[in-house]
Image 1 (cartoon, rainbow, N blue to C red):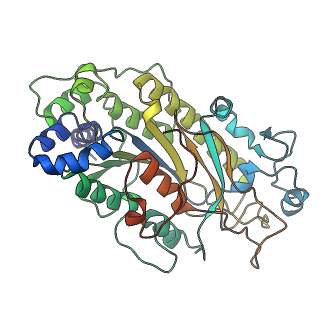
Image 2 (image 1 turned 180 degrees about the vertical axis):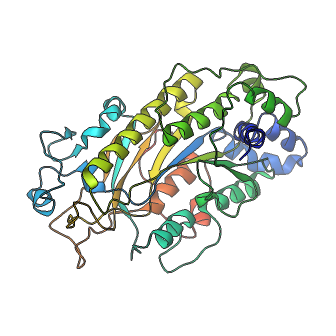
Image 3 (image 1 turned 60 degrees about the vertical axis):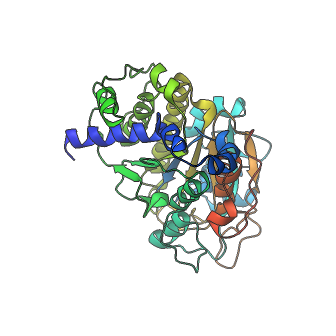
Length: 394
């Protein structure tokens, strides 16, 4: 992708995510009765941002959130199990992989929630089909066209009577995932430098005659590598809307950013690869928190991991793990109720294929975003009722 095109898209994404003046302009054009009925109910949710992080390939949950007190864990993983003395203990039976040590300040401040046992009924262990199920929030025997966030923003437009220039941005991937088949989302697949000119682009995209002077230089040090670059790009897009002028004009709608960390399909030689991947994840999440605090957006941002499935509880002959069912996922933010949620893995209750049973339907995570976080009708969007999880202080 050419640099100029990337800059244009980046600027548009920044304008869309912050929507300076857009909502107000649309409201002014709406009939008074309609705005009076629909707008106030959603007003307090405006500005709440969702950042999704896809752990592509299927993360090994048992070596991420470790049931170190269960002897079955070490029987199933004689070669790749994480030694209890190396793991970071969270309570009397649960620990984290040592690479996740950068997340401990979040854990100790109760701003990191770990949801265990996340999956769905009748799991499909194909990468392609399973991530399609997660992206569309479908049943395993149901085929939906639109991503769950695409449907969410359609619902938001129907309730408010106005639309947005864009509603989400995918960074570092051409796959739209949960934003699939929406006409107000975009993908940035390059990490070209945007640091010195995004403010000018923002001004042009927003129709302003002058550039925005903004806090484009972070104290935060972003991790090296593709994932770190994606996080830095996302934060700089948000920074372009964090100026005093943008804040004064701001009247936000809903927005989502999707990032991807590749490489979790660890069939072979898992220990070193998984160590590196979890280190990238932890360093990236810690840097993201730091940058969001700098931007004053930590309290109105919800960060959530997801992935197509977990790994099999038993290690394979190649010092790796094959496709499995459930996995833990992380949620973090200034208004997150930290701690362990869901159900710990019960390795004595594996199913007929030797996999862990589902404890939390992944659509409960989505319902938590849609209802308590955004004030939308989760049942209409997910096409079934799922109980939100008590993960947020709202």
